[in-house]
Image 1 (cartoon, one colour):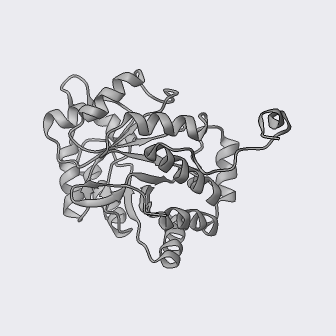
Image 2 (cartoon, rainbow, N blue to C red):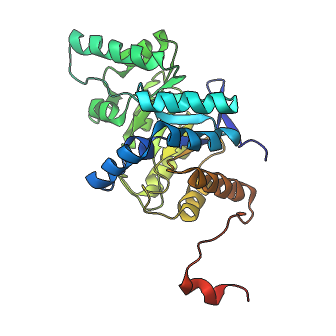
Length: 280
């Protein structure tokens, strides 16, 4: 199998399909019980086995990397076994308070992100969206944060749940190379209708990483991925979370089949109620 199609962000080549980390680190968007199960079940070895599947298919981008011992161990194991490296997109939460103390704490956090080998650093929406100012159509102090990211050898971007972020960053010429934006057919966690976000993505000056394409498990992979791949640009990316090697294989194959306009070569679910539609 050929490697997954790629795009470029500020001269860095990366796969258009990206690995998400929520289903490894306990962020289910479902319940506390589900989060607890993820944290207990997803060991470094299990995470590494999933990463291996992606790396073997040429899917080398990972969104949401952090200085987490379990995740860093899993990444190292998978890279060692496949001989391929991961392009890391970190997404740290930075202080939003005014003053030097907040900037000093931001510097410490960014130092830790750089130490993980992150190529890109996109402050998390918890930071970005708190600093977004609809009155002035700016993102307060983010120019200083982007400079700090550059100083540490990383490429700045923005992670957001707000559609305004992309517009304001483009309007003000903010020094960022890419955006993370929620986008899915269900409208899950989206703050305006999806046709508005669709237009914003298409008009964005930088490549966009769309997240939650399956609405945190609320959409079947074929439905969620078909919508997403069909409605973004060739330079944009799709980030998907998976919880097993088989899920990773399915996401890769479904995505490739959609891009190549063919039927996925996957076994369908088998239940008694579907026997009547199977060939005799």
